[in-house]
Image (tube, rainbow, N blue to C red; front, top):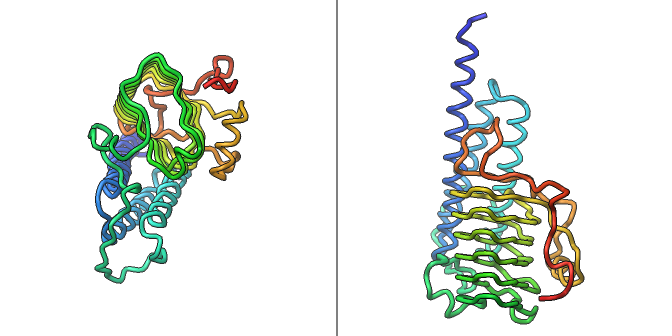
Amino acid sequence: MNPKSGDESIDQKSLFDLSYKTKIKEINDMFINIEKKCIEIKDFQEILNKINELQEFVNDSKTFLPAYNMKKCSTEIKDITKCYEQMHEKLLPKKKFSFGKRPVKLVVKAKVEDQFEPINESKVYKEDCGFRNRSNENLKLTEEETLSKDIALDALSNCNVFICGTPSTVRVSSLSTCKIFACVSTSIFVENCKDTIFVCASQQLRIHDTVATDFYIYVTSSAIIENCKQLRFAPITLNSPLIEKSFELTGFDQSNNNWKVINDFDWLSSYESSPNWCEIPEEERNQPFKENNV
């Protein structure tokens, strides 16, 4: 046996981790860019090409990747493909989904409510429903107020927020010592939060620049974190009639909860756990909103 073979295998795995994380991040960044602007069909084709390249890259690495890592990568690629299909269906509903490569020149503008504006642009609050610059309050949005809307929460301190119904997206920025509930039909985006507790359900969950925050979640794809520390996760519990009703309106399957699948873009190794997040021990789980008091 060649004594260097073990070192070579470790080097291969390290290079794989770096390349794989980079490719995953490129695809997710493309998702975000599509949500920010008018939609061009060629952008979707480019994402599809990237997903195919990622699958080929994983397949080519199976000679040195352990079975566990192959399965993990396969699951993540499946989740990304599902997100692609859901976004394609939402933003280009009149075009039949296809993996064909024929060139298409059509450009379709997204509806105003489908566009994903950066959370730090104040103009989103002119059209969106939500709360900003509030402290020490109980805040609530009704089903009628949130139906298919984009919700924005910004600069809240020591507030309890209950978002009823089924909004399209929720964007959260600059919260401290708050408790938030939201059951969302598509995506939740969180940034710059601390000492806060989220009870949330969505297809996609993205968390940036957030510290010391707990998440009780339901998510159908893998949650994404970046530049975060001291995050903790646990599965959502339907512990009140209002939460149960909001959850039922989305039609989410409780048995399909990927709350443990956290993709940390700041942690390259797929063989060791990220130090930036952990599970909430069962004895410490204390999900808010057990009573209808918001």
